[in-house]
Image 1 (cartoon, rainbow, N blue to C red):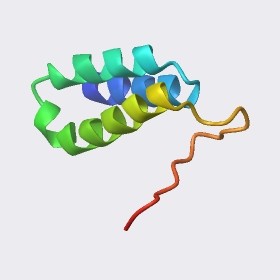
Image 2: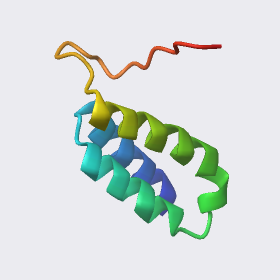
Image 3: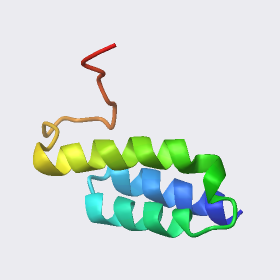
Length: 70
C-alpha cells in the first residue's frame, strides 16, 4: 500500500511539473521493501524527469511523453 501511494504521489507531481517532488517520491519508493518490483518504472520516470528539467515541456503539455526513437 505504501509503494502504491508513493507511485500515485510521484505521478501527481510529474503531471503537475513538480520535478523535485516526483524525484523525492521515487527516492522514497526505492527505499521500500518491494522497490525492486517498480525499479524499471522508477528508472523510466527518473530519466524523463531529468530530461524535462533540462528542457521543460511546452505550456500546453498534458503529461504525455512522445517517443522520438524506436
